[in-house]
Image 1 (cartoon, rainbow, N blue to C red):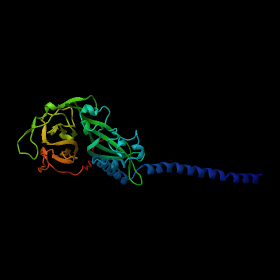
Image 2: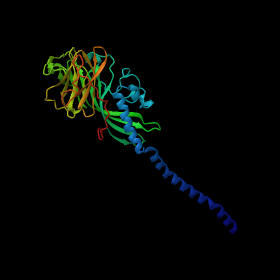
Image 3: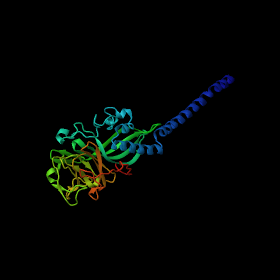
Image 4: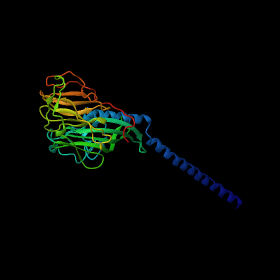
Length: 343
């Protein structure tokens, strides 16, 4: 009997030891899973730097007018209808306006003339801080100034661009943001609105100077400018709003206005930058600091010329003139990285 008991105890002994071993293995596996999850979700520092560089590549391509190059950074799911606001960049920008152009923007016909299918242009941008999230994605804060030149529209948005690292390069998978300020043309007046609230009246054609001195012409010899309507507008950082008019002698001007506090109306007069002859303003591009802007114009032979303006001096960068009375010149497309911008 005693021998049978000892044999039974010998048979039962390995079972508790096996259960204990399994318990330790389960505990170790339970601890390992969160650690593995952290390793899987936490992107390396290099991935964060790559996401910032990818943001610069995407926005730079958009600003240069290369939607196909910009769309190459976007994940297929984000480029599909209903995806990220860059959905329209994979094809020609006139085919589908990205949702970044906010609802309620006036129709082109109401804004006055131009291409019946407006395209959203990126006139300026700044890249801010980057942060990873628990899902392994990287959020890059940006400030974007956009315009619809044919509709006389300009807006500033704070955007959170969401990137997912891949073996090849990061891909944009989502975006979200908020409006800072918008300016648009309604008839013979500019309207504006901030983050909340309705459109409010701004500058009118009647408020613009009647005369201005064209670059390349005789100094201090003003000519009568055209005020048939507003042309393309753009935001110029803290300096205000860049504007143009339509007609035989379009006015190129700066309306000084601090976009950091738009409720405070500008007290200064409109600064005349130029008067164009036989040229039609097409759209603006603004450098990161907002001290230099480039206006693309169409001249009589159908070609396009980029005219850079020094906003501090209130004049074109180059005094060299071509027949027609406007200055020539080029500046490099914007490449900006501004730490801490956005939120």
